[in-house]
Image (tube, rainbow, N blue to C red; front, side, top):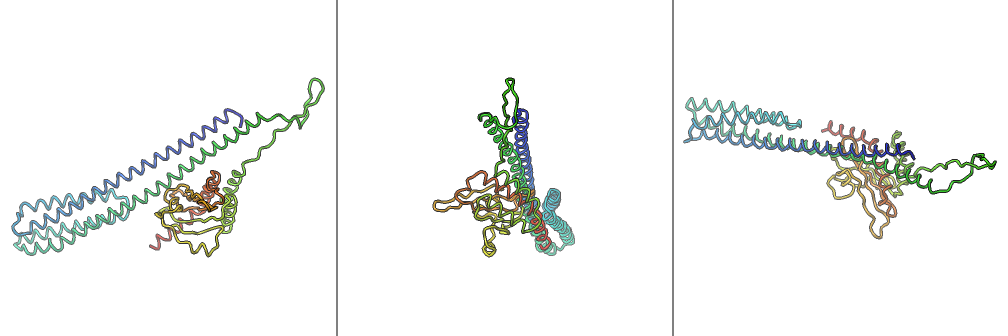
Length: 391
C-alpha cells in the first residue's frame, strides 16, 4: 500500500472506528443515566406513597378515637386518600417492570378497599355506633393499609431489579461496541504498520537484476526482477482461519476440534469454556481442551461476584491476565464471551512460559472468544427460555 491516498483512506477508517466507539460509549452512558434518574424518581414517589398511607391510617384512627375532633380528621382522611390514590396511579404509569405494575395494581385495589371501609365507618358514626366504626378502621382498615404499603415496597424492589438487569445489559452492549470499534482501529493500525515496514524494506534493499530481460542502448541486456511476495503474519493467518471455521461449526465435535487448534496457536496447556447468561447466572464449565471429562465434571460453578479472573472477565467484559508466579511455568488469559445482550461467559486459557504477556496471544484469545459467542448465543437463549418456562 504505497499510495498516499490509499494510506490516508485506511487511516480515515481507523478514525471513523474510534469516533463510532466514542459515539456508542456516550450513547450507552446517557441511557444508563436516564434509567438511574427514572429509578430515583420512582423511589422518591414510592416513599411519598408509603408516607401517605401512614398518614391516611393515622387520620382514620383519629376520627374514630374517643376525644378526637371528627370534624377536623374527616377532611384529613379524604385529602390523604385522594393524594395516595393519585401517587400510586402515577407510580403505575412510570413503572418499567411487570412485577412493579402488578404490585401497584394490588396496592391501588387495597386503597380502593380502604375507601369503602372509610365510608362504612362514617355510616356507623352517623348512626351512633362508634364501636362498630372503630372496629372497621382498627381491624380491617389497618390490614388493608398494611397490604397496600407492602405492595408498594414490592414494586420498589422490582424496579431496582429491573434497573440492575438493564444496567448489566447496557454495559455489555457498550463493551461489545467498544471492542468491535477498537478491534477495527487496531487492525487498521496493524495493517498500516506492516505496509510501512514493507515500504521501508523495499527502499533499503538493493535491486536484484534477475528475471525478465530488458534491452539497453549499448546492446547489453539487463534482467528485471519480479517483486518478491511477502508472507502474511502467521498469527493473522491463524486467526483468519479460526474465524472462518467458527462460522462453519455444525456440532460439538467441530467445536472441540477448533478448541484444540486454538490451544496450539496460543501455546496453551488447556482451555475451558465457562458459560453463564447475560442476566448473570453462575458460570458453568461446559467444554474444555487439555482436561479430562472427569476433571471437568468436578469443577464447581463460578459465581459472578467471585474474586477470580473468570468472574472478573464475566463482570467487566474485559480480558483478564493472570501472570505466572516465580517457580511456575504457566500463566493464564481469561477472555469474556460477549453477545449482543451482554457477557454470557468466559474463555480461560493456561499459557506456557509466560506467553500470557504477549499481545498477539491475548488478541487471539479474544478472537476465539468472539467466535464462541456466535456459536453459543443461541444455546444460552434457549437455556434462559427453558428456565423462564419452568419458573
